[in-house]
Length: 353
Image (tube, rainbow, N blue to C red; front, side, top):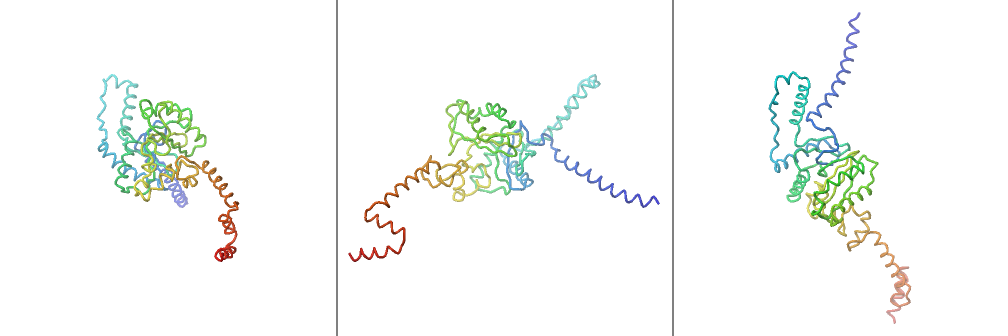
């Protein structure tokens, strides 16, 4: 009588235990490489945007970064950690010394697992962050884009933009100001100088104000050297500000306009295909002009949409007196606009006369 009750309870219990054991094991595999598991202050790396396929994006990023990383820094070398030199036998007996030794072994094993490039959780959809170790992200990304710009060879299908991140801090205005004062010195502190622009992007963050951040950072750049000037057309340096949740990512890049805002899909296009993308008719970038359609029709440089409006009103005022003048040649132009039928008799009268 007890036999039929046992088979009914075993399959149900087995399925539930299988699901409970499978999910934690799958999550644990993502952390085998050691190091931070998500984007946090104090990291350096590369911020990559993609089109709805993050797993493929990570694969392409590893392939591309390893290819050019080996070219610039040589093949990746792993640390061969020998056994730690042990102390005297008396120290081994001490519990405190044994605990320190164990902690040191754990740190050493973690360092052995750290790779040159390691993907971490970015905190935003369609955004991948690759943590870097022992390299300069801005030089590596610039080298990649420079080679793709020259060869026009497309090497990625999913990756859109690839932005180097030279430093990260907390995404609060006071923390950003304090961090930027020392972070921006290598590029803008006297005797160094140059033209610059600031590019701002925020994801999953609602407490930061775009205009306030740009104003504060521009003030810091100006305080480092009064000869630093803003240039929104073709600046020498571009300060990239990427905020994701509570982390602010900063970098200073070159050739931002030339390399199509560091877009890997656009930089490989020919000059005819990519000409409208980086600049408008007035020589400024499309993203920097809020009223791009109006300013594009203006051939002169330095005029925005607010300056175009008064010119159009003057033209209208000039046209009105022309239509109202009683001169013969101009007086005949008015009925031409009103109807095309009345034009026939007048032309016949002129011919008869």
